[in-house]
Length: 395
Image (cartoon, rainbow, N blue to C red; front, side, top):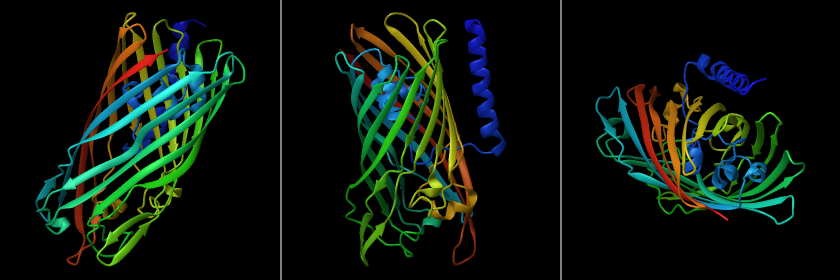
């Protein structure tokens, strides 16, 4: 079978699976609270990385076994500036646009192959989930008062991978999470039945794990799979005028399957398919969130010894439906798709400058919110732009 034939089969299967899985539903939206990728390299591939370890940050994030597939020891640093546009309108008339500003999302990854050993070790630290919505005063559906909601989850991943054979590796990473969630007002919601000012929320700790497998075939196809457990967080604590309020909120599990093809000289094609279990995650299930499937497709082209170019697209089902809008008015984590582009410039022998841009396509969700005067129709419209920059150093 020729290289072109293999590539055609890969692209046909990937496109067919995506079309079957996502488009019949009629709605494709966000991965909810989770970011679709980590770091400038992986983000420029739209998050496709379970079977395509292009850098330490992305490999550590999606498949601990794949760090054995990196060609060099390396350390990578990155920061993402994410600016979301959120517009909230209702049948009461009027509306407001959120003004949350740019959120900074860090990413750090280090991978080292032990000398004369089948073991590879690594350490990842990255923002993996979160959102911010800051609505000004004047919106009737919010009672005319300002409203604020945010969450940030930082994940620390000490990782180990073992090369079982020259083509097969397995990996494991205990995950340590540091999360913060804030609402003002905090209700009415499943957290508290009445609207109250919320203060004093601190950062909270959580634990989980991730395990994976990575396999390279003789015909240039790569396959990967990983399981990220639920991230079990301690109860989030909020101080209100009526006393202490607690909310049990865990990050959901993620199952990732990936494939990649490197048989065409200077090209890498990657596809990931994911299942995210919101329906079984404490907190999100109470908010009405549903399980979802996601797909990411990315391509990298080495243009020269110094320049690499990448692009990708990510599709998702929606965790929030029309019937759940009333519980998620101030946290509309929806988007239709992500389009990503970026590249790397090798300005020194072992140092790359990485840049990427991601557009989170505009999407909206409409539902009804019960009020004293009867049901009110509410619409949230969301889009976002991300700029990610970083450096990779190999040694």
